[in-house]
Image (cartoon, rainbow over all chains, first blue to last red; front, top):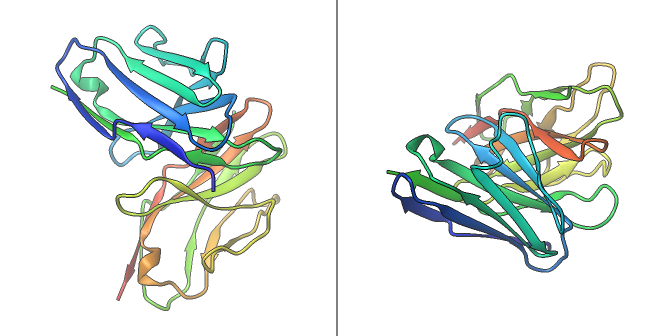
Length: 116
Length: 109
């Protein structure tokens, strides 16, 4: 089945530094990928929709200058957390939808970001 | 605005007992509804979707537009069903998936 690979699975960084998270669709082309954030004991919250070849669409309340999204190819989207702060510590998950009407989303394994 | 509500954060049942995970939604259009499951230390994965009307791992879910519900059911729970379950609604117009807050199901031996 369709696989979405997310890397790294876990990262620890110092406050003020930037961290890049990659999301790849391994066996299909994804014109659109989605980035979610999950706080402990809470639901997945959509952060932004990543569109290949164009600017990402951010959800209300998500700082686009802080969470930079690049979708340079049909199989890769990256999320860069810039100038990270401890409150950015969270679980970030990407997903992509396989081509075809009513096709489901497939999720990466997620990235646990800890900002010290 | 679309909304998905899962009223139970935690649900425990004994092995062999029936289980129902509740999901209610609010959406002005024609909804596409899904159930996703996340087993311990694994990625979130699709369990089933309403348009397929399928049964996966013994689970079924029927869309009730009158009650705006999409409850997940299984007649005989198994210990391996213990996981986090998310109900989700896809908006075609907004092209986004809205998740409920999730229900942690624990099946006791």
